[in-house]
Image (cartoon, rainbow, N blue to C red; front, side, top):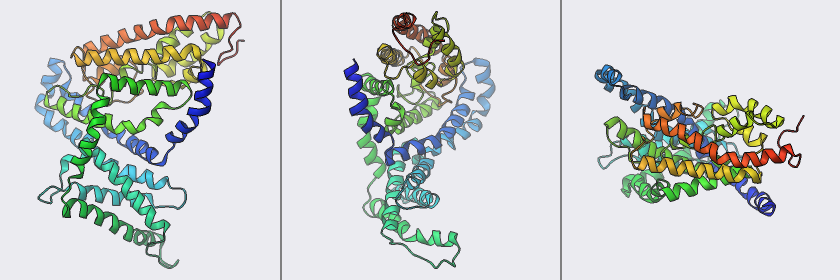
Length: 416
């Protein structure tokens, strides 16, 4: 086991950490974070008129169209916002020369609007939401790349120092902006290429794979193993976030229309897996509180408030779970078990599927109710999930506790 841990730490960790900080991936990750408030607010306004309680639903029914308008202008513009936010962070991430991030974002939005025109040369507003998200990301990265190319080679308009900086910046972006918009115009209008459809066809395989049980289990296994060796799995695999967000958009639309949401692993699915944080560590914290080993007991009490609100770092680095042979197995096994169980129950329509994007800090059980649009069986499964996670952790924790009590294992906290 030590040889495996050393190999991962010395050979795999450096390139994976480098990947997590890669310029393009960072821009996509940070850009997608900007859309989170919109999806949360839109989800709340989508849930209100659809609460599965008869008298509440009857009360809101006459006002449903008015209420869900907010959903249309939040979730419905995720792609448009992504075109701006990804371009902004991509431009800001260049270190060799300084590129105006705001101007880059504006040019990216213009290019995105141009790429979405239909056969009658009118703007297709349906692509402003999650349907156009992949296109928005590609356009944003392309815009930032072209802006950087022109400015690095000094192919821009310069003014004397006496000209106000704001005016100078605006004209400096003129030539690269012209290049971006001309290129997009040729591709969409002159050549008539439906870029969004082409990208959807290319990425449909990834969406399909992530929505299958084997594909999702592989994804979650990699994520768990990365965390087990101290690498931020979410950051390394952030490239998958747009896929899950696209699934969520389709589920939210289906929920609003009263039909079965088509995707199982959409954003919100992991609420059933991350009970107290990655690896479902809340039951582990409860065991620590009741531990006979003083260090574990103290740490458990300190971790509990954070764990209730899905903040996992005190447990991950306090026990520690990182590089800990005792905890790597249950940490990963719990993740895979809950992922598989949740997937199968959703596939069989025993529990509801994700239809709302909610703050990740909402405690378990409450989050299960909200993310499924008020599905009671999902709440029951959430309670059972805590029991299952506890059963998996128990023998491994007791073994580690016995070692600690015998003085053979030094943990993340020294005994007093």
